[in-house]
Image (cartoon, rainbow, N blue to C red; front, side, top):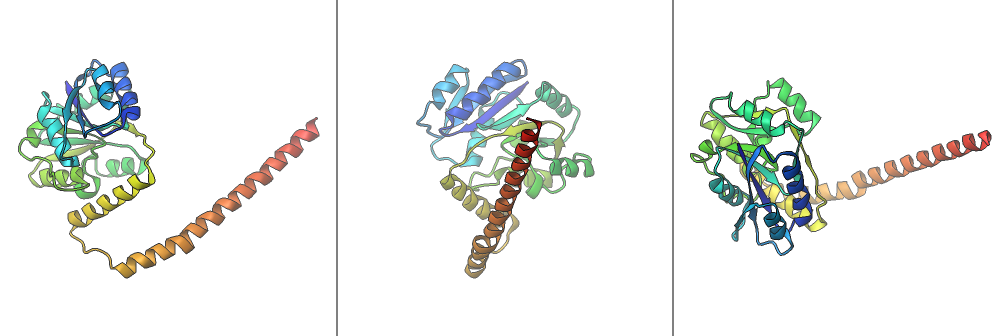
Length: 261
């Protein structure tokens, strides 16, 4: 069986959809659902209780700490990490996952394919992850093998990319991570402030992981000017031209329909 660990903060709207689908389609495949909740003030806890989730509260939040707490509380060796706005797809998602896991030795986790580019990369590498810092696990939907995690806990200090850093460390120790030929939907409408915060955390984590120097302030300013006055302008005129062409096409349809009348 598989344990499911969901990280959540004030995402009751999405959480309810995810839990409903898990309960409707995968009830026989899932041994338990653990919600690691970051002091939600909406109805997340009520939603989780209605689906009999095991609820763990986290006060000093980091993505890595939430993952560690969830896996620690799980009772199975295979743990599916899942965001509150991601959902597995396919009737045999869990069955195929378990079947694959049991055939592999020295396996640390599974990354599910969710784009054509990832699919091409997986085919090229025979579904074996080669570059963990770029293509390691995606904590939005991935499997972690608990027996490996017990030897190598997730870094709790990183603000982002804790999944990629963990992938790198366990692969350095000789374990393997595979791309897996199943998929998931990732659905969320982020606020502008959330997007800015995510950009900050992701940029910081990338520099920490790849040990690169931060860009100069001048480079940042020049990049901003380029996006505002060139890239955005190009997009604007491109969209405007497309809208004009669509309007012309609509007039052509009107003329064709009027001739028929």
